[in-house]
Length: 196
Image (cartoon, rainbow, N blue to C red):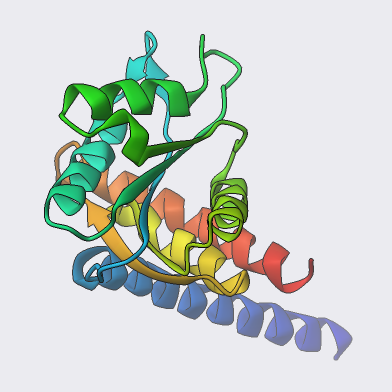
């Protein structure tokens, strides 16, 4: 009898996890395709790995999106957030600043946050900069599959924000891989936030 009860509980837990996985996957897809930016005090670009000291293709897409938003008047300043990874020769924010300047963004419109090593720190440290500078709201820019996690983080910190997804690099199979991986990461991420 006890074994049957344990089996039932395990089945219910498994079903609940599958349902939650599907819900999170749907939220990632939805927010990555439907989020619309709003005019704000600043634009925050979340970092991503560098290739030989330069933005990777995925990070370049994020920065290009930020340039589009800046040129369209969605923010007067761009906060570039990213520290130095273990295999990187400089902080991501440094390379991001150089990329934006080469794209025509004035250097005095770029604010560097060079300590963050993950999504939580990207948002937290950028939020601290916003508070210090008197900024009330921001457009958060990251790759489409990553946007929902950034939004969950911003919500948990009470940030006034809108989201702007940057298109992902790669074909449908790579996209599927990243979305599945992000869903798994988001599952554990929300669990940690809930019990932090």
